[in-house]
Length: 231
Image (cartoon, rainbow, N blue to C red; front, side, top):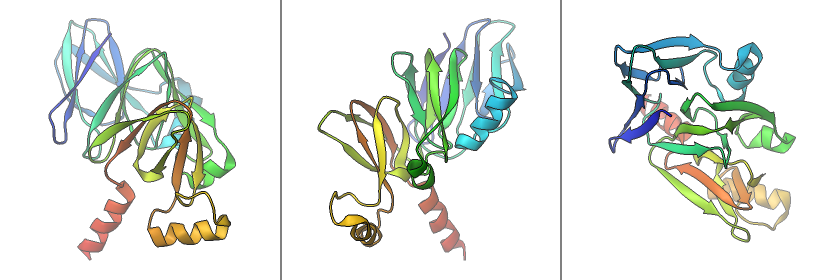
């Protein structure tokens, strides 16, 4: 199986070592460098329908880059679009739901499938609209987050409430619902007012048992700040 390694502390590279005959796929324009033993091709993973669904679900490119070790063993370097940390996640015993724009790369036996979610989550959670992307198969997937990244363990009776803009991916067995406040009382109007005054906006409440990967920076807030400073 291809070996993924995150190298560097600030804006790291994803180093991939492939043995002859092995293949990975990654987000379009992720490839930075590859050795001459490797070939790179643009393909639609899973066919036309799957490619269209993934594009609408989490903003992936229609065509993905497939890198194959054709002429012998070889290495390549990949990089996500925005600066930040990367996390290598094992797929198989556990599967994960990936937030918009977080996918970087995966081994060939990992599939990204699109599934529907509840109307409330679709409208408010900003986790892919009416569709979200879920891993299946076996191998490894690499995700990126804006800023640094951390893994949180959710346990029964120990729910995690996370600003939706900081969620990178989460265990697909976890239950999640949206909320407009970190509290549980006060009614919808009171919660909405508290949400606005606290500055938190929409949060996701995760329950059950599993991991949630979060990033330290809010992409949308940073973009708004940068645009405001440029005026």
